[in-house]
Figure 1 (tube, protein in one colour):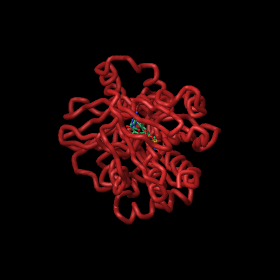
Figure 2: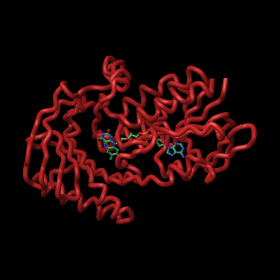
Figure 3: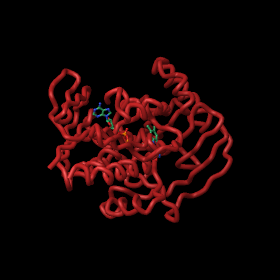
Figure 4: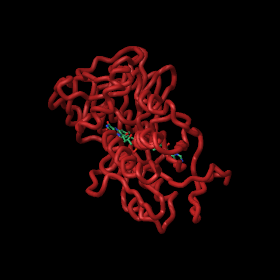
Length: 328
Ligand SMILES: Cc1cc2nc3c(=O)[nH]c(=O)nc-3n(C[C@H](O)[C@H](O)[C@H](O)COP(=O)(O)OP(=O)(O)OC[C@H]3O[C@@H](n4cnc5c(N)ncnc54)[C@H](O)[C@@H]3O)c2cc1C
């Protein structure tokens, strides 16, 4: 059996690893403590927040089939939110999300999906792969301190584009591909309240502001009762303020959300900011993944297609489909 290293335990890496472990010896390396990548949950001050991906839809039959057992296990559920579009502080439209076209979330929190998919896989958490070296015999991996992480026949990079380009050899096709893809940043503001706020919606798309999204996180299925909001900045604001001091960003986004949603910031009992350097990517027109047979190097991730959960799934699945015959 060939030895395969999958770098990154986000959705694309986990999907690829699960498919490939049936025909090869797979080890997944993940720099964080938890699994699921940007399908993440943050805990703080007794509150919980899905501070990355907010919800996802399933358009392809493959993704719907993949979700079926997760829905049956209660790890994925439909969020029947009242959805609003706001033009700054003006409510433009509302509609109710229903099961005719479900808007899914992990349950009881977004990171439940990564945790479930990680079951049964060989994963090394808290392990950043910092060096990849290729010789005639395959790949050697090492961490930031130069500690050896093992030798592998194939490497699958399931990382955002910029992180892929940093890691893989500059003469690889994967490098040339990844280096040309610009990912956008996003700030997430997490707000916890001791008392619930009265809002006429549970999810809002915001235009004409430096914030693009507000969700009542606690309204998602099977969440803790404590009232929580997740606010996302626009990509444009985040890209332009990547190096601005976090406290200035936090103050500005608080001001924006209070103006847009009429929230009294004095009622906030918990507030935390997260910067997502590589949050999402515009629609791309290239392939869904890249498999370089000569170098025994593959890449997958949302950035091949679009910064969406379903795109990460499709990319991981397609990479595994192409690799199966090569690694068996
Ligand atoms: C703020 C925000 C809001 C979003 N909202 C939505 C939404 O509402 N709907 C939607 O469909 N999508 C949304 N997305 C996008 C969605 O989260 C992503 O498309 C999807 O989760 C990407 O999965 P992935 O496997 O491609 O990458 P990731 O989830 O980024 O996985 C990559 C993994 O690699 C790990 N890693 C990185 N470098 C290394 C290294 N050197 N060694 C080891 N491990 C490493 C990372 O820790 C991470 O776990 C959002 C994303 C963000 C950030």
